[in-house]
Length: 256
Ligand code: SAH
Image 1 (tube, helix red, strand yellow):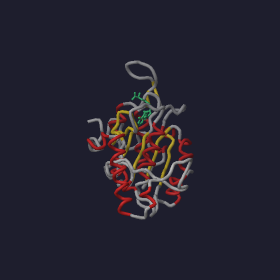
Image 2: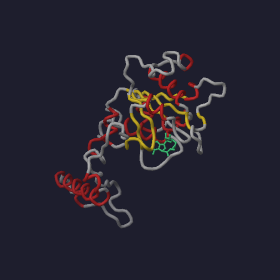
Image 3: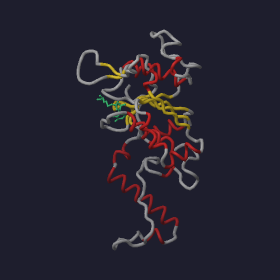
Image 4: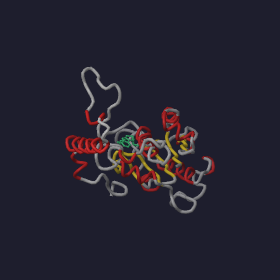
């Protein structure tokens, strides 16, 4: 799967990309992650990405023209210098070869909540483009012209979309076949079956007086499976009854 990220802090992704399974997936060619500096798509000498809001108020807003230039370049694999309105007059819809935009996710608190089901849907795409906002957010016209999806990682506000993009990347990448290896399967994990996962135990058998549920060392696979299902159901009932009550997803953009 190919994922392009647009951000004013490209270095931020060095950490996630050089650590752990994400790095392995990248090295194995299962994940083609390309991080782009949004400022490369500005057209002024100062490489400005933001401006004061029309109508006044606190904070700065990211400029839609910069986002449209950047998205056009990334969608079409063009170097920054060749875009900036080179393909279409500014009033036109952004240019994309073949006419179909790759799934382009704008990270925003007002977006469709990220869930395991949503992540599965995204993992089936050949390509994703992730747009990381900063400041007060992005000019509404970039939401209209660039995004196919608006995505939120939860009901709280971050400084910027980078953390949210990293959450999307990890959640989606581990669903890409081959990334987790053969021994682990995402199918019986939390949320996949609408339940939280059962508790895990490993060595030592006793720790500070705390033992391990007997059934797990009984060798009775049927009993173990039943115990795990019961614990998963009980945990879900106690901690997240909402998961039992409702399907875990919302509309296509989460804002309609
Ligand atoms: N003024 C905005 C918040 C801006 S936070 C509001 O009130 O909704 C700056 C940027 O951080 C946003 O543009 C977005 O890209 C990112 N961000 C913040 N919280 C997020 C969340 N919960 N999910 C996804 N992205 C988020």
